[in-house]
Image (cartoon, rainbow, N blue to C red; front, side, top):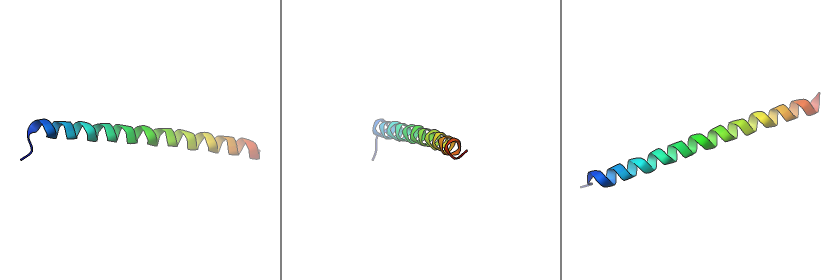
Length: 44
């Protein structure tokens, strides 16, 4: 049996991981857009 406290802790960890993954995705997306802009500027 899992008591509610440990379940809550696990949920908190999952939330942190999800938030971290979202942050990484946002940073990667921004980096990609920035790179594309530089490439476009270099070509023209």
